[in-house]
Length: 228
Image (cartoon, rainbow, N blue to C red):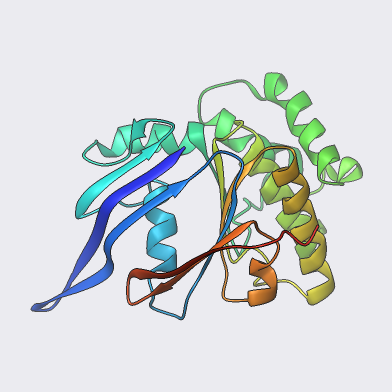
């Protein structure tokens, strides 16, 4: 479902080339829950950005459902991100002036769909993540865990091929983190493909497969037993 073939990402720093990723070849199957681990600077976020179309490789090919993410225009990448990828960030990235339902519906609002057509689905997703009574609340009225649940609902609004989670519990306490991991595991059991970057071995254990990056290359690729 997701294919990376010989992917290298190089950044220019002064007179030096910095290889954030080097010749990565990776297949992620539909329905996998992949955890990406590695020390700071190993290339985790770069890998996630490339899979999500936030960046393009210096060399190599990337496909999502057969759609190329390499060698295309920024406008084409934007449409692919909006229609095929759901993002979950550490700091939620909710718009403070919007209600929970409006935040959830934002990706479809950007497609020009009227909110009244989006609202029933946004409310259904908020109910799915346990926030049925929070649809009209704004981010400042929500806890950290509730804001992350809104962000997860937003990531699901366009029925994405893959959910990309970048340290999704890095700003939450341990108990709330477990609740978020349980929610992600439930989504995985429903068939959702998930790629999650984490530095925490316990967090990685919630997935079905873990790759470990080191110096921009895959050092380990192992199957794990999902905790839930």
